[in-house]
Amino acid sequence: MELFLAMLPLLLYYIIFNLYKLGYQKKDQCCYMLSYECHKAAEDQKLDPRSSARIISRNKNLGIEEYKFLLKTTVSSGIGEETYIPKNIVEGREESATLMDEISEMDDILFDTVDKLFAKTGVSPSEINIIVSTVSLFSPAPSLTARVINRYKMREDIKAFNLSGMGCSASAVAIDLVKQLFKTHKNSFAIVMSTESMSSHWYPGKDKSMMLSNILFRTGGCSILLTNNRDWKNKALMELTCSVRTHIGSNDEAYNSCFQAEDDLGINGFRLNKDLPKAGAKALTMNLRVLLPKVLPLSEVLRYQISYYRNKIMKRPTPKDGGPGLDIKSGIDHFCVHPGGRAIIDEAGQSLALNDYDLEPARMTLYRFGNTSSGGLWYVLGYMEAKKRLKKGDRILMISLGAGFKCNNCVWKVLKDMEDTNVWKNCIDQYPPKTLANSFSKILASISDESVNFTSLEDYLP
Image (cartoon, rainbow, N blue to C red):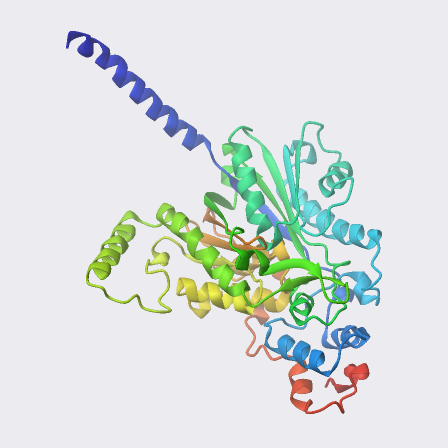
């Protein structure tokens, strides 16, 4: 007993020391977002209805049924008439893209956004300690990060990472990677560059599940500047408070729902099948089970647990389309949903019981810029900022879904009122429009038989 009492102060000291150490380490782990810049392509890359008609007419593999499917899907896709495509497709070379076409597309996006980051924040290229690129379908040698390092003459000890094949959720993966690296790299700056190579991945075949990618995916991208230096907190826009990654690739349906493959004619494409919305909902549900208890008030979590077990004991049925059961808005103010397509946005909204106001940023981003893959989330954030929705203290849930199948979500806390119109400059006042009507709806309505001459589809436009 005497020995125990003698050792007790040492034991208490050990416990207190470790608790203090744990608290200090947690306090020291921070990730601030200083700025982000989205890319807007040149006006001559805009895919207006007539340009779209010319591209459709160039595909000689399409028959009457494929034309009907393409037009019907375009009309109901939620995509507008001011999105952007790569230069080689505008020039009619979608089936003969070169390596230089891909490199030029990447250079335009990456250099434009990184230039703006340095100009806006005053951070020097020589101060960057970590750089990450997320481009799924293009992995050149030297790498894309090497091209950026060479252009800006960055430091020799910079840590460079190139994430490929990660799909539309890759930007959230990169953010989480930087957060982990910040634990061992103190007072560092990191750049995340999120985009996709579209120039050599336009599908010229007739497989309907692969034609969807032509309708949804467009040119765009974003670069984000992050730091864990607390001296920069007063200049930061947001702070990362939580990130959770979920991968359900072990499920065959989910794994095959979004897949790069060859069609029956041997033409490469990206297949999006009917299981995609279901896979997205499943991955999102699994992710939120881990994430929400970390960000919602304890009172709301306890209320949900009591309600859940009460209903289980009394054998009450779970209400359909009622969301997850938790009051998510008790801890989240804004929802940055991946603009992957109308079905994806609607499925996310139904799963979380979100209203039209919550989903407006994602729907308008899809309409104005299309699905820009891993860069899409930042256009949604830009819409919220341009609409002056983001106020100091607000919390934003970023929801990203991607091939694999993955759901990677993160929560940001707004550190100051955000009011920059960014990439939405000169057009934000036009959104949301009164109608999302598509010019091809009139053509679709006129199709009753094979009398329509699709080789001159442009002539049918108003």
